[in-house]
Image 1 (cartoon, rainbow, N blue to C red):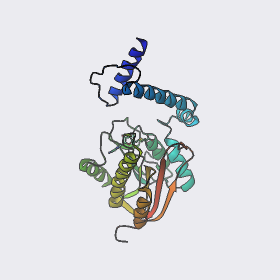
Image 2: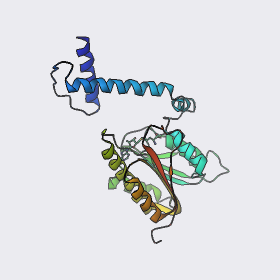
Image 3: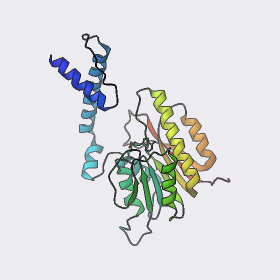
Image 4: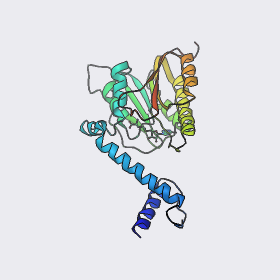
Length: 256
Ligand SMILES: C[S@@+](CC[C@H](N)C(=O)[O-])C[C@H]1O[C@@H](n2cnc3c(N)ncnc32)[C@H](O)[C@@H]1O
């Protein structure tokens, strides 16, 4: 009876993640849904354990970042010096907002340091998220939608162009590695096309992908438009994750 209770609780949880909640009849332990439910419980438990023991999760709390992802951008910037006060940056896939928090600190849009030039940060995400002081937030905004891109272009009118487009966007994982790889690469190309349209010569493009067979092709495409292209994997990116970042610098301009 207890097992049945946990089973239905799990079905309810799966339902909240968009998986069908149509009535299911238990046929005993060999039922494949029961096995899936057990696997999911195990992976939720593993996720919780990892969160509890992850130093970056604790550190994010101390530094008041909205999530541990902040450290990936901090590390990339500390090593590659891609951000500075006065820069105009578009942050794609910004929710819950930790990269935006980093960008606000490093690009001075709120003029926290009056001795430095003021930048501008535009942060968009398909999900809703809370404002970050100093940044323009476009919540519930899908990068693939024309309205979103028009809204960003509109905000950019008061600037002299984009210095960097950064994308930490990730689609909801399907669990099928190849499909997830293709989907994230597709999103990255959308961000890249937007970057090519809006960046100043010399600009930077940084994107996350889950590594796979299309990575080399994307690197080649980036090299057509940017002078320097690197694959970076910050220490704060979990070593068991397929996540890598493509960093493209020195935008050549579209006529090059
Ligand atoms: C790993 S999270 C980003 C974390 C963020 N960089 C931070 O530091 O808080 C990936 C984000 O990509 C967003 N995303 C996925 N598809 C998107 C799309 N088509 N347009 C805009 N955002 C998208 C998701 O909603 C999710 O919030």
